[in-house]
Image 1 (cartoon, rainbow, N blue to C red):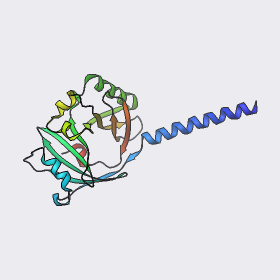
Image 2: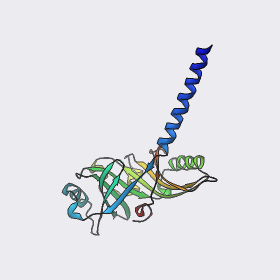
Image 3: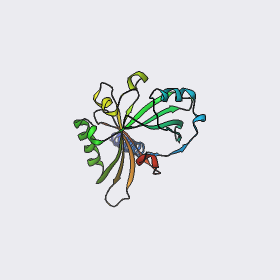
Image 4: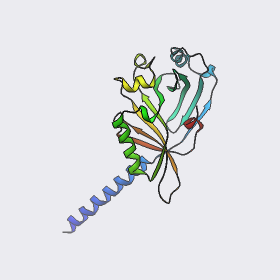
Amino acid sequence: MQTKYSFFLMCICVLLQTSMCRAQVQDAVKTEREYRIKPELVPQKAKDFIATFNINRSIKWLQEVGDDGASIEAKFRYKGQRHSVEFTKDGVLEDIEIVIGLGELPEETKQEITSYFTQEFDYFKVEKIQAQYNNTVKEIINRTAKNLVSSSLIPHYEVVVKTRNSGKKSKRYEVLFNEKGAFISRSQVSIRRDNILRF
């Protein structure tokens, strides 16, 4: 009898620890800093890739330093859409993010994302949505955000959202969903960065 009781207690402890770990991972704080850098400090490989967009206006080059290391980012407008292209510090393409509106999401995806926020928070306000692509260069170039969303390319969606629960201070999160709106991960943004809301 004592053995069964001990085993039961051990199972409860494991479940509690697992739940606590999940909560800690889910609410991990994301700390990042971004600052402008001069084009001459950007790897030529990254500049060559950006040149394929044939952009006439200026490009903002930034270095992003976070918990998982440093990267280089190019921000610009292309065909009326805000683009953010991220590279490794050596100039290797990592992903392209394109700012889109809530209305550009597939209807079922939008409903799933909205449902997630409704269940998790008493109040939420979507501040920014980015379609995130990790496809090959040829598949990405010369497409607008609308073309990408409606094409066969499969994006993830990164949503910046301001939230609040009753009796608690508001928090800002970056939440990642798959193409169908299923939750993947979320990180609390510890410092409000200008690039979240402004371009």
